[in-house]
Length: 168
Image (cartoon, rainbow, N blue to C red; front, side):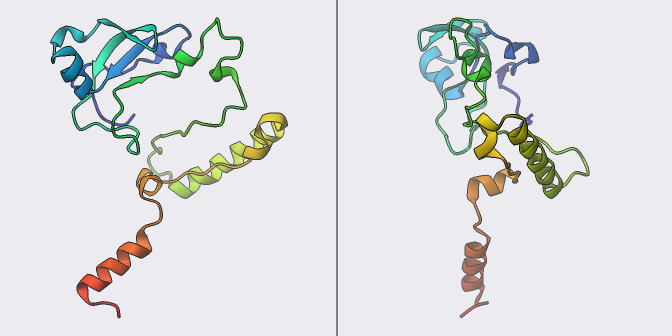
C-alpha cells in the first residue's frame, strides 16, 4: 500500500491478518545489529514479547513507518491482538479508538470527497453503535504530509517572504 517493497523477503499477505498468525517484518537496523545481515533470516523464528514470530521480510534502511516513530524495529499485523486465549481481544473491542488509517485514494477522488465519505460513515457508526462510537461520530481525511507537518503553510510563507524580501 505504501509502495515500498522489503529489501529482502516479502511484505504481509492478506491471510496473515487471520487469528493466530505471527509473522513479522524487521527493520534493516535490526537485521544488521541482531542478525549480522544474514540472508537466511527469512523464515527464521524469532521471539518478540515472549511469542514466536516468523520473519517474512526486511525493510529498506531508509524506511520509516509511521514517520513520527522513526526507530521501529519490527512490524506485525493486528492478528497478534486476536489471541483466542484473551477474552476481550483488542480487535473485537469496539471501544478501542487508537488506530489511524492510511490509504490510497482512487484515481479521480479528492481528499475532500474522501473526507465527506468518512464523515458519513462515522456518523452512521455512531448511530449504529452508540455505546462505543457516540464520542467518535466524525472522522477526518488528510494528506499524509499534512498529518505529519500540520498546518505549516503560514509559517513557510512567512519564512519564504522574509528570505525573498516579500514582507516587512
